[in-house]
Length: 128
Image (tube, rainbow, N blue to C red; front, side, top):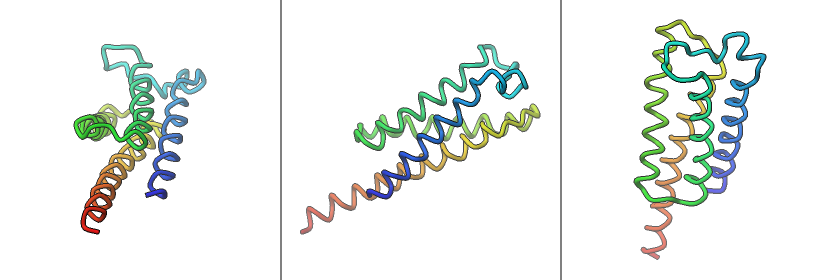
């Protein structure tokens, strides 16, 4: 499970760093973070992404309740399921966003694998 922890930490840090690029003035002035179809400021989605990635530390290291994990997982998959096709539909091609989408899905998959590994470890301890 140590390998999963290191991988999840690396992905979380990369996700936060990559999302931070959307706040850089040079990127925004080139239209990278301009999401005009939404009725809220342009910084909201990158800020929410950073919060979601930051929550990954809690998911992987503090072992919160199952409902908290599920909410985090559903928010991640739901955001990608909506934002990726929508970005293609409105011709909004953002490499930073797409990288975050892939990292987010990888983190959700890792969290499910980590959860399974914990359950198997617990079961193994009970048996022996």
